[in-house]
Each structure stands twice: as C-alpha cells, then as structure tokens.
Image (cartoon, rainbow over all chains, first blue to last red; front, side, top):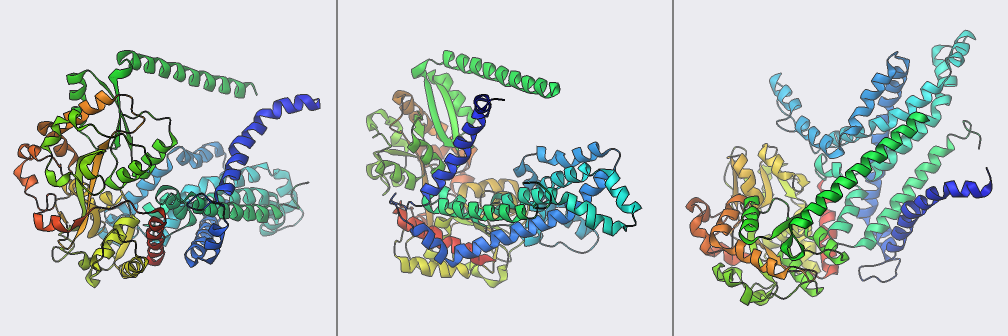
Amino acid sequence: MSEKKHLFFALPYYLWLALFVIAPLVLIFYQSFLNLHGQFTVQNYLDFAQSSVYLKMTFNSVWYAFLITGLTLIIAYPVAYIIAQFKSRDFWLALVILPTWINLLLKTYAFIGILGEKGSINTFLRFIGLGSHQLLFTDASFILVAAYIELPFMILPIYNAIVAIKPSLINASLDLGASRFQTFRRVIWPLTKNGVAAGIQAVFIPSLSLFMITRLIGGNRVITLGTAIEEHFLTTQNWGMGSTIGVVLVVAMLIVMLLTDDSKKGGRAK
Amino acid sequence: MKKLVAALVTLGLVIAGLLVWNHQLMAKQSAGATGSKTLVIYNWGDYIDPNLIKKFEKQTGYKVDYETFDSNEAMLTKIQQGGTRYDLVVPSEYTVQRMQKEHLLRKLDHRQLPNLKYLAPRFLNQSFDPGNQYSVPYFWGTLGIVYNDKLVAHPLKHWEQLWDPQYRNQVMVYDSARDMMAIALITQGHSVNTTNYGELQAAERKLQGLSQNTRAVVADEMKMYLKQDEAAIGIAYSGDAAEMMDVNPHLHYVVPTEGSNIWFDNFVIPKSAKNLKGAYAFMNFMLEPKNAAQNADYVGYATPNQAARKYLPKAVTHNQAFYPDAQTMKHLEVYRDLPKKVNQEYNDLFLEFKMFVK
C-alpha cells in the first residue's frame, strides 16, 4: 500500500486520537494551571503536594486500587484457566461477560440489597442465629463490590492468553519430565504474562478513580481522588484543582502502564 | 470478515432508522406547537404534579417541554454555557443570587403576576432577592434530623444530640459541605453564612467529633437507607423526610429549635427565554391556590402560598415538622451565595472531615 493511501485510511483514526484523546488531555493539563479566578499559576500543584489531605487521598486511591487488582487477579487466573479447559467454554465465558451488560449503578444498588441491614446476607445470618452485622460502609464490602465489577476485565485477557497456548507445548513439557507445577511456572505462566499485564492495566487504572461506589457502598468512608475530582467539578466549581488531581491520576496511570509493560519484555518482540 | 461487515451494516441501518424516526417525532411535536406556543421549563426531577402540566396545557393551549436537573451547579453550568432556551427555571436561593450577579436573569414584571398576592408575605422580599425582582418562591423547606423511633430511646430535638455517644455509628451524614458545616456552626452559635476562617476551622473540629457516630456520608441514597432501617438517625431536607416517612412510619422529622437552614426553590426567567408570555402564564397558573395545594400535596414540600393552605389537610399544615412555629422560624437562616474562595474553604474543610471519618 502506498504511503498516501495508508494516510487516507488512517485519517479517521488520527482525527479520533486528536479530538478525543489528545485534546482533552491538553485541556486538563492547561486547566490545572488556572486558579479560581482564571489566572495562570502553579499554586494548585503546590497545594496538592503540601496538603496532607490530598496526599493521604492519593495513597488511599493507590492502595485500594492495588487491593482490588490483587483480589481480581487471584480470582480471575484460576477461573480463566478452568474455563479454558471446559468443552463448552464459550458458554462459560458468556456467563462471565454477561454482567458487564448491566449498568454499573444497577449492580451497585443490587449489592445494597444484598449487604444491607435487611439484606439477604443479614436475613440469613439472623435466621441461623448469628444476628445481623454491619456489612455496608466497610472496607471489605467496598473492595468486594469493586472487585466484582472489575472481574470480567481481568478474566478476559487472561483467558485469551491461556487459550492461545498450543496444547502441544504443555504436552511436550510434561513428556520431557517436567512436573505439573514446573510446567505451569516455566511454560504456562510466561506465556500468559501478557494477558495478566493487560488485565492489571484494565482493572487498576479504572479502580484508581472510582467514585460512585465509594459513596454508595463505602459510605464515603473510603475517599479516593475520584471523590475529590467530582467535588471540585460539581460543587466548588474549582476546575483548576480538579484538573490538577486529574493530571496526578494520569501520571499515576502512566506509571502503572510503564511498570506492567516492563514485565512483557521477554514475551514480545519490540 | 463478511460477518463483521454485515454486523456493521446492520448496526448502521438501525441507527439511521432511529435517527429518521426521532426526526419525524420531533417534526410532529413542533408542528403541533408552533414556535411561541411552546414553553420550555427546567426544573428539579420529580418536583411537580404531572397532572398540573396537562391541565395547564389544556387550559392555555401552550405545549410544555419539561426538562429536569439534579443539582443547582449542573443547571447553572448548562445555562452559563449558552445555547439553551429555557423559559422558566427553578434554582435554589443562593443560585438565584449567583445567576443574578452573572446577569443571567430577566427582571420580573409584577404587573403580569397578579397571583403573587396569594403568597405569604414572610416568604417574599428575602435577602437573596430583595423585592422579588427576579424570583418567585415555588417551595420552601428546612434542614433537620430524621430519626427512627425503633432505634433511638428518646426523640431527638437538637443538633447537639447527634454527638451523643449512645448513637455511636448510627448517624447518616449528608454529603454536602454547606449543610454539615452549617450544623456545626449553629451548635457553636455562629451564622451559617460566616466567612470567618477561624469559625469555620472550629466548626470542622466540631464535625470531627461526630466521626465516631458517623455511619456513612451519603447523599440521595440516604432516603433508601433510612427507609430500610439501615441507620437510626439521618440528616435530611424536609421534603426528602416527608418521602421517607410516607414509606416508613417509624421515621420522624424535627427542625431543631436553636436554628437551621431554610431554603427556597424559586421560579426565575433566564435571559435566554423566548416565550415570556407563557412563562408568566405558567407562574400565575402554579400560584393559583388550588393548583399550588395540589402540587404541594404531590411533592411533599411546604408551599409559600398562604391561600393554598386551606386546601391542604390540617394534619399537614399544622405539622410542626413541615410548617414550624414562628419561634423556630425566627432562628432559621437562608444560605447566602458565598465568594468562591470561601465556598472552597467550606468544601476543603468538609473534605478534611470526610477523610477523618475513617
């Protein structure tokens, strides 16, 4: 294909990138240097770096995103592996994907019904004589719901990576005297690393800026940077500070991308 | 590949079909109501009896185009951006003040509002709009305490009781900087409109003392939680309280006598309005005592319409919780629009409290 033709077909893609990826990023970056009165300043960044509230919030965001990602990974890898072994794996995969068709808020509200004082779990606990417990507004419930919502995005890339492994490789490994564990460690794991990295990116990055679930399930006992951004844009209308936090999040995401990319070095020709 | 193309083409056809359909619907609508006969109203969600809109359309021949918002800030941003043509909007009082400062509002012509006479004088001429030059009160309400008589030993009467150690982990805090800071300020005897940073800091320290009792910091979903006995106590607006009490008879609402916030939602005509005649007609229609009573009955908030009260059940108009006595009314304070910097301080301090809750 000639260079010109190539450009012609790529044009919509570049336009898309420029309009919906680059331009918003530039605007956020620009806004982050404006104060309440629209003057140019770096004060927002200084405020952020000097405020114990924001620093603690940043730490919270990263910590909870880490926990959510860790939990989904622990669940997703075996699930993906088992589904890949099934004969009717398409059906099982569809079951995994199905919940993503339902609106996120609806799923969150459903959990309120499950975890509440009068929810199904507490009704059951009372029934077996254990009495009701507060489940909502705890760290555990927050992480559970967030992990549930993110789970499909971890399972899918790992599943794809596992399915792509040729069975002959595993057979060869076993035939040549490797134990099952060695086969996993030396053959399956390295070949699925890419999938795991993609899954971590797909889960960690959105988890950094969760905000509705922090309020609905976490009762704002879990405060992340997403909460602060929402407040700055909607309540105080301090778009500058909101954008500054946005930039911090973008940087945090870039770091995650770089870190997870590093682990792929062996797997893919650059 | 073939399959993919087929899928894409189908999708494209469906979208095109929907667009055509939508276009035809719109055309039909605007044909039914040519230009000046359409009235565009922008109001809070679920904040009017839909039957009244139908009645108005029948009576006057106007076609009402009704849109809703869920926060003053969201509404304000939309109008500031321009390109809207709302004839009537219903902001809260501090937003009326802000919109007037930003020259977004049209002055009202009182000669075209004969039904203004039905409103109780004490709800007119408020500090946010002296002489009601720009706004007409639609509903008013208060901020107060909702408690569940199954879960608390004694009825609550005062803000200070929220701090009582016996309600550990039982208070649902409302996720709004202005309201929560106001409560702390009132307990310390300060104005809810203070701009004194020292007083604000003291209020924030006071709020931190509430963190032991705080079960969660939530917004609208509090209604659902309190209906389901999820917590004993909540901080809520009167209208939300009325809605909760309808469902759960164990809930009660009190306005603390030492003071609280009183708020107003008001009709205003933005500069971008096209159908002024229709806007005045609608305001007059809604001010008609019978209509105002019907609306108040549906929405559950208190009406500023004095003449409408006789059409409302006595149980409602004599209910201290929703129509507080003069003594309590004296201590209620309206929020004033704060300078952006102070508003930021309120919110930063409240954010600090939220971080502290854990």
